[in-house]
Length: 247
Ligand code: ADP
Ligand code: MG
Image (cartoon, rainbow, N blue to C red; front, side, top):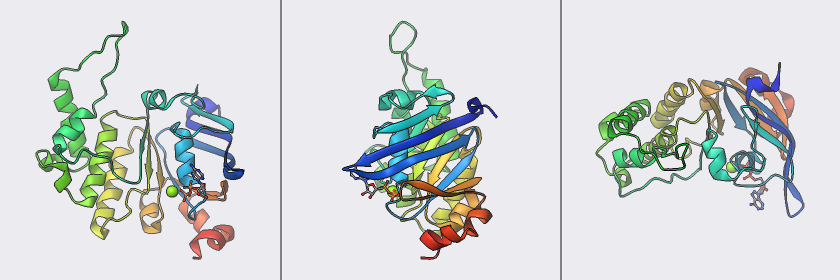
């Protein structure tokens, strides 16, 4: 299989903090339309890996390509423009704006061929807001002030804000932390809905949740990949049980 068929390729990627290798010669290949879950103990380097992919942290060695294009040294905004969206652990929504406004301001306003800003018509923006609101299950909350939403709804809204840009790779870091059981179920359904037509990387600890959503699971430990494959395969791996699942 040629590399071009992967959405994301990460090869021999490393980064050190004060001599400590947080990510250590890591290789990762994510298919188009794949939902990959990354698990592993605290400090394994999972968040750092996402920081590297989205350009927030610079690699000390290795290569990242997306749809065949080099991402390794691109500035963050260009990585976003290439189609990579990333959600942090804490929601960053505008609390004093409505759900509708939060989605509306997240609509990408690009530059045309002559460098001038071009604005989408209202109809286009409205249609996109409606579609995204339906995808995140918040069509009935469009008028609600975001600060009044539940913790789970705030997380969904932030996912919606990322969806406004229609990313081809969407990365979520512990999206269900702090959620109720019901919110976790709804989030699993939400992720299954939004993964159609794009690749996703989700970092999560809740194994019931992982089982529900993952196409394939990657287990990280000490900056490296310890195991990779189906949920059943990694769950049965003695090394994974030893460093992670057994605790
Ligand atoms: P995980 O998300 O798997 O819990 P992290 O990627 O957050 O792990 O962290 C991996 C290791 O790298 C930890 O030991 C953490 O303290 C360290 N680390 C992460 N970011 C930085 C940074 N900017 N500066 C120094 N050390 C960092
Ligand atoms: Mg983390």
